[in-house]
Image 1 (cartoon, rainbow, N blue to C red):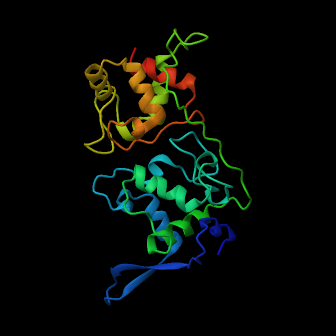
Image 2 (cartoon, one colour):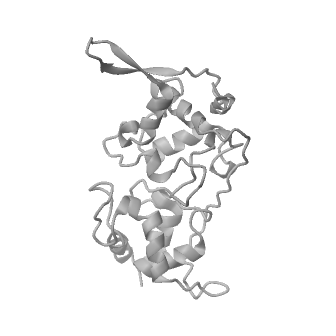
Image 3 (spheres, rainbow, N blue to C red):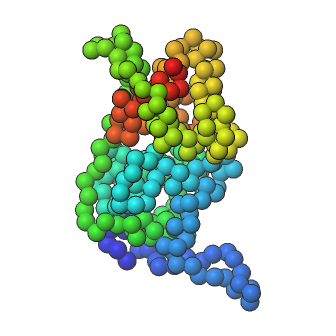
Length: 250
């Protein structure tokens, strides 16, 4: 067992395999290595048990050493971090539960000693870098603003629609599908954008670009439903957001 599994911080010893509820030809249960089971879980939206969930862990996270600019940081080396969520969370189990409950609609929290819990952390341990890693910075924009607003101090940024299309493909299309059609979206309950934001902006007499910026920066915590993750500055800069706004709300 990798020492880094102790980053769970809950005082348990993981085992190398878990029982699955499947029967083989002889009607016996099948023992599957926990790491293999965990790999399947991170790719499965049904992991959370919610009929309303459309996210798998890998919808947002990659698992490679190269953090290729996905929706969220790679899971590679996640067990080696000093802390998580920009230093606001001190245990990996709590960090996992934040995603599991708030974004994947799991309830209650994932029990570390359950079969799924053991399997998940065996798999995450297999992605260890082999060295202690610092906390990844995570700068959440508290007072949301439209970065293209010329009335802001210092003047607004000028967005580029072509660059914004690339930002949309990286950051939005994985869940929302194609702009304005929703083709390829994760499920029928995932809203089509920018039309859903246009409706909210119109109904509440709020500028569309500010609605879009708010949703990007605060995700589901915007308070209008959904379970979208938020984008800190490290995952989408103001310049990238300005490009995205020019693409979605020219």
